[in-house]
Length: 236
Image 1 (tube, rainbow, N blue to C red):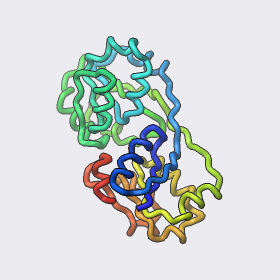
Image 2: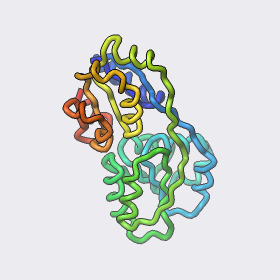
Image 3: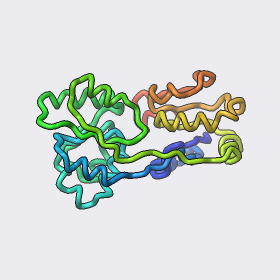
Image 4: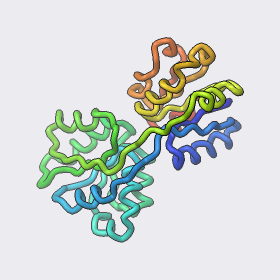
């Protein structure tokens, strides 16, 4: 299969390697690039907090960029949204990692089961834009937290000729979509080519991502049974 990978470049190359090993033809189309704000991360870490929460590996990369300055915090409890983010945290040196099942809602449930009597708020190291579901869940559970936006994903501009060639020469078979923002950006780029893409598969990390796909493609949507890359790959 000819498979479009819409993840940021660092993550996309690892995904592409996996696709090649499975006999697919990956097509890299990163739609965003990460802009890190390490100074915000440092200021947030210096403030009072009981534990850390991250819903993406990108937030962990911001922390890792601090090098030895991160050492005082590596013994703190870190709640990670899923296995991929937990692995990134482990590689960064964190020693007390509690991993959720892959979604913000599930991470909320995990945190709430541990934090009934906090002496300081949880520190959520977040990106922008992001889904509000994790923060909404934390409010609903009454878990005190503060949010620090330590990175942002900025869109990459492509001209229409480039997009047309990527998608139609030759036609792609599947699009991998790991976030709502990437789904939104891709659908915007693909809009002029909807008729030619009538049979393409939209392989989505979660139902939250799939909600962005236009109605005319709903019959083409596949949603991972568990929100991680193994779940996505199982659909190809």
